[in-house]
Image (cartoon, rainbow, N blue to C red; front, side, top):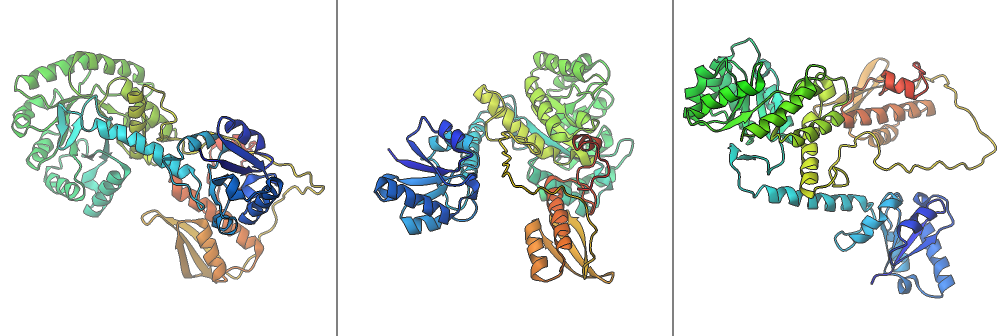
Length: 517
């Protein structure tokens, strides 16, 4: 059995000892409050104390040492000096048992916290569950994609108003949806218009970019006929209004279709199924239509359950009907809608990303689908399974405030900004996923600095000697960090304005509407 030493600080002593009490672990408390402030030199100093107390070399006592993953820098120096390996453990002490139980499965590092390796390990186990499910026999396929209750809910992303997009814009959109994790790409047409002449090119562009199934979203039977001729993989939607124009084409091309009701949902779907089955058409997906909030949302959920019990066909769940009409950040809503979709037995979940507030919806639905599928397979709650959508808060919050007891306390006040020899315009290039800082002198742009992290741009500005005042340096640090956050989470960035500016944040900050970020 391996003998392990954990070196920690005074503040974390209690929690560390508590979580490792059932393991073969020794805990040494260093002469420091915060374990994250340990350095290789301080660790070596503590090792010398232990060697003196025990009258043995550290490598005779222990197989290796663990310190918090929050320690900065490389710990290789400890091994070079004291002949014992010193690794970074998890960032949070509460996760130490998970690390200790999986030591044989991961490779510890002197540079990086163990969390990233544990996360990958958990994800591997989760992905094995999904991979095993994909081996199951399917009754229904859309192109090469298996559809059914034994598989994860498939995500169908709609590109709205495709006839209005240039070839380059459409290619870019298809690629983005593909990279976001969409299982299928939907080409949304324009309601009330006839764009038959553009169908062939639109489908060709999409299929040149992706190998995933491509669908068309229209009720115009002429557009659907043209799409069928051009090897569309799925048709949205067939209704009682257009079925008589299309039923022979559907049979001949043998392409899966989504059918939708009008007013009497159950009865309309039954009529459509009877008509299609009379022509030996069985590649049918039922969309009972998810209604928006306050317009029959809950009733429509019950209808989904009823449809699933009455008809032996896959069902289609239009999440965008809720998210696009609800002024809420989309990730939580998408997660809950996916949970509902699983509960009512849906097989395809559908969304556009039409509005800015719904950006990343496809990625959110894909992650939620995996999360809920794994939880369903494990018969567990959808938590602690590797995938999550906790994007802006923390699953565990054990932040500590240290009162150092200093005599002098200054309460901050905003001062005057001193003009420097030049100025910067900070923007985000979304296409290249870069922060751009353009340097101006006497109103003329002279150069720009590009990067994805605030620190690298700040370091470059200092290296080029483009600033000479502390106030300007601190200002740039603030603005570039805001730009980095905005780039990462898809938030709009405006230089000199707060990143979070709506009523929710004003109230949480004590109501100071004039407070700058």
